[in-house]
Each structure stands twice: as structure tokens, then as C-alpha cells.
Image 1 (tube, one colour):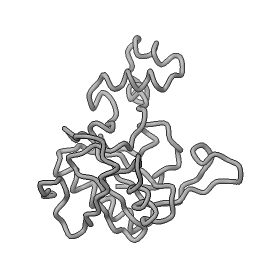
Image 2 (cartoon, rainbow, N blue to C red):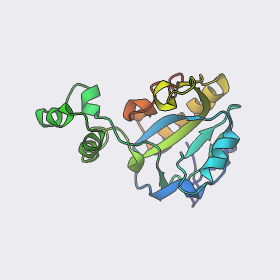
Image 3 (cartoon, rainbow, N blue to C red):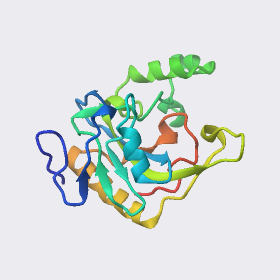
Image 4 (cartoon, helix red, strand yellow):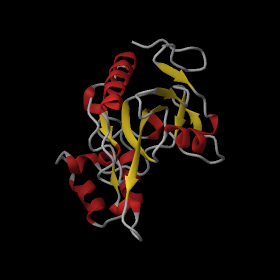
Length: 201
């Protein structure tokens, strides 16, 4: 179980405090889930640099190729890491007739609005109530193709998996997050299906 300092940073030798305040977007009032991502870049240094740019997006934690864990945002602050939510009721085959009517016509904006009227676990965790973990991993794509649709993310390596398992275990214990509320990014939002595909915890 983690101890946090007053700024919301983990007090543990395995986690390197590396604040990137430009990725923070307001108060994180509650933590109900964890979303696992991959960067699309080949190095932790490039991600840390991008997190320091104006209007940058990022996650609370970054796991480098060698398994190093960086905490880049306070656990007291939201980050923009999820995007528009998919309908959880559709994935779990429990949508109401009204929800099915909304989902009949493909409209990600309306779907997200419908989902955000619910609470976890009726919907997936969102920016407002989840911790983001990003794993360094490049995306490979053919010439002229869109990485978001056609790219293939490199596999998560053994050192990264070890760090991810440990970090998720500590976060789940500290914040009382059930394992049913930990997801890979493409499950909860419309992202490249190979992102974090090989991640395990």
C-alpha cells in the first residue's frame, strides 16, 4: 500500500517523482479505476519531454523500457488520458432499450455523454475518476497509413510487465480499486486495438 505526500506523490523508492504539471487538468476527487496505455514513442525520455509541452496530454505514471516507473502527475489531479467512452452496457450485454436507441446510430459524442451520466461500474472509468499508466512502446505503421488505425504497437517487455503488475497492485490496494475496474485503453475508448495488447497484470 502506498503512502502519499501532501502534493499527492508516492513515497516509495521504486517510483521516481518527475512532475509534469502541464498535463494536470483539475482536481481528481475520487479514483475508481486504472487505464493502461502505450505511448507510441520509443523512449521514456521523449514522453517526458512531450509531457512538458504546453497543452500536453499524459498519464499519472510512465513505465520505461527498463521498468523504471515515473510519477508525472499528482494523484490529487486529473489528466486527459481516456477520451470518449465506449458504452460499457454494450460490451456487457445489458443495455436498456433507451440506451440501445441512442447507440443505434454511430455517434461517439452522444455515446460518451450517455455514459458520463452514469457512475462506475455502470460505465468505464474516465478522466474524472481514473489513474492513467502509460507504458513506453513504439507503434509501427506502413508508409502513408494512419497509426491510429493501422499501426502495430510493440510488445510490452518483461521488465515493464513486472513494474506494471507491482504498480497496479499497490494502486489497487491503496485506493480500493477492484480488479474489474482496470482496463486497457482500447477497451474503454476507441483507440488502436493493439495499444497495450500484450500488457498483463
